[in-house]
Length: 349
Image (cartoon, rainbow, N blue to C red; front, top):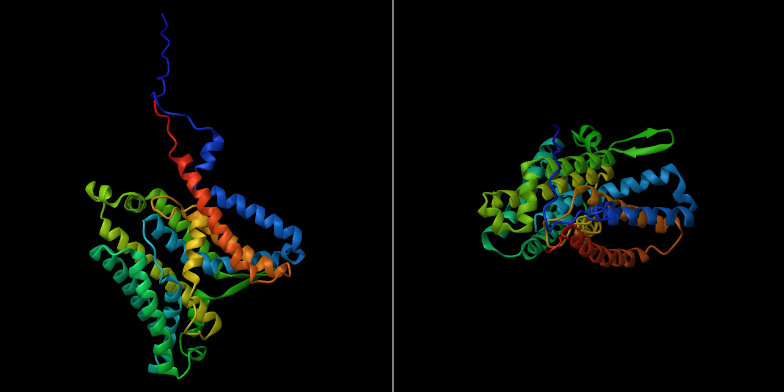
């Protein structure tokens, strides 16, 4: 006699979410829908937006913001902010440029010293936040002002102006330029390596968040650091590492800016920290921490690139761009609140 074994019934009190609800629970879905709508919008209204050259220009514009935004997004998932992320880009480039020009040494040496300096700033930010208990908003706001003043003051002291000197004749320029700011042609389209680096950093961050123990730690410290510490998560090490990751990516973009333009303005980067945060929030990262992903942050940066250039391609006043960013931020916060509710929806019974 054959026995029929029935499949176990699903646990009581749990709801099976439909496909639409599961999709809405993905952090990046809201940003993806917005990106598609904005893309179609500019395709219709801006004829010059339709060319392949324009699309890759948008990708380049997105990559310059998107690389640092990846680190800022991870840090926000970990429950912290870094308001010094914008100026550290220019701190990195200025340190490399002026050190090598003043002492007459190879740019590779300056790049390595600049990297060490940026990582030290990231370490200090994280250490102060964790050891003092002062919110990261305030700690990094202080770092922001220190770096902004130092960029201007030291640059003027060394060069006599508020811009760095031309580094194109210093040894090491060509090889570093190939790594950080080269481009190549595919047909009539120019592709900057910063776009490729951006994709690689997004892929690496996605792998870390979804496939590694460190990714679990990031979500844990962002959701509830006390509970994470109680189960053995190295909260101090994780958060300091996230601050250092932001500084590393800031250094990377600083190198790109220096080796593309040869000189830098000492007052640059102010305000970019908000663009990184907006890209993360628009991409589905919660301001409260513990939720988000790198793909969503990348889509948020792509929206920034599309809009900043799409307004120009459409022939509109570019001053409207800031108004758009404000609207997008408000809408993103509202959408993220809804997404969080969908992601945590459970039946009580």
